[in-house]
Image (cartoon, rainbow, N blue to C red):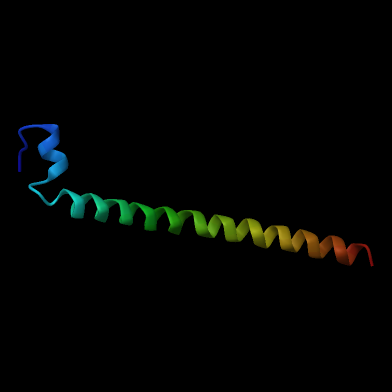
Length: 58
């Protein structure tokens, strides 16, 4: 499929809103799948460090 202009590319044959929203949602899900485990690991390590400090102070 070839497009005559960049505007035609963005319009995607009048399917542009669907196509670009599908790409945006997919990208958002992929980003969440990457960032979520990183945040969970950081939170776990902080909780463990806090627990170890509490146990050391007893």
